[in-house]
Image (cartoon, rainbow, N blue to C red; front, top):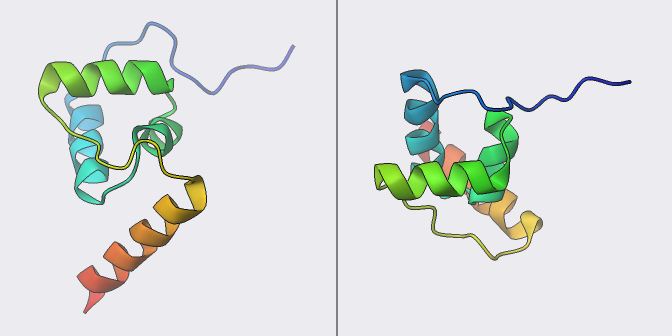
Length: 78
């Protein structure tokens, strides 16, 4: 049986919270942030709510979110 890449019942570390805040600033959705962190979407949304982190683009298609993320990264490089 293949192992899951997700962290089941693992507490969020300060590094996870820092990464979550960074991803929210990059305007990624909670779904894509969950993929980056290796956690479920529900876990990321709940932790974000508790910590006061706001993911803005939750219901947009993945292509739009990735396009916005690339655009933000290019703007940072300039």
